[in-house]
Amino acid sequence: METKSVHPSGHRHRRIAYHQAHARKLRSIRAAKYNEQYHYSGVGSVTVLLAIAALSFGLFMYSMVIG
Image 1 (spheres, helix red, strand yellow):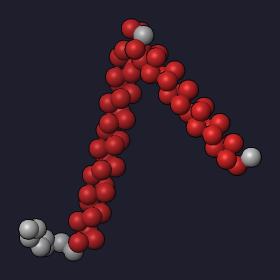
Image 2 (cartoon, one colour):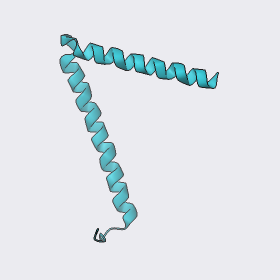
Image 3 (cartoon, rainbow, N blue to C red):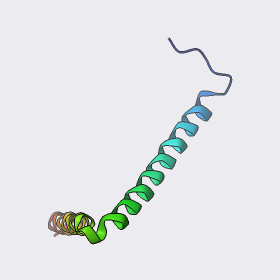
């Protein structure tokens, strides 16, 4: 059972959404730092290559759907 909060429910949901966006931003920053840190050991470059491959594949599928 959830007790009714003082704030209206809309405000609460907005705060949750803001928190999720903030967490996502922090995660991406952390991932970028991680990739930077391990770039020279080869792990980061593999991750970048995989990301580029996935992106290009996504663009290819997108263009196929449109065309």
